Length: 68
Image 1: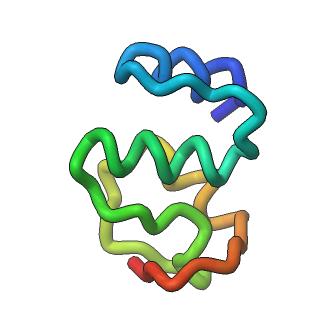
Image 2: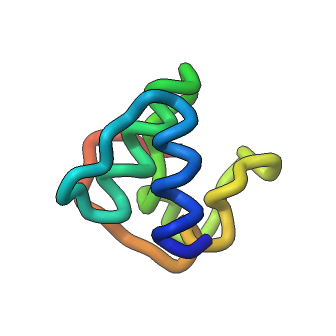
């Protein structure tokens, strides 16, 4: 998902992206939707197959205490 699409989704949830990095913004979106903030923590596997961020998530690794 492109950053512009992510920012649009965030805007729709009342989140101001400002200078947030992609992973930070996605985590904010996940929190606003009452979902686990697990983007980039999957180690290549994830049980949340209906997540709109899954394709990018499986390719991304961020340091976070949350895990899928």
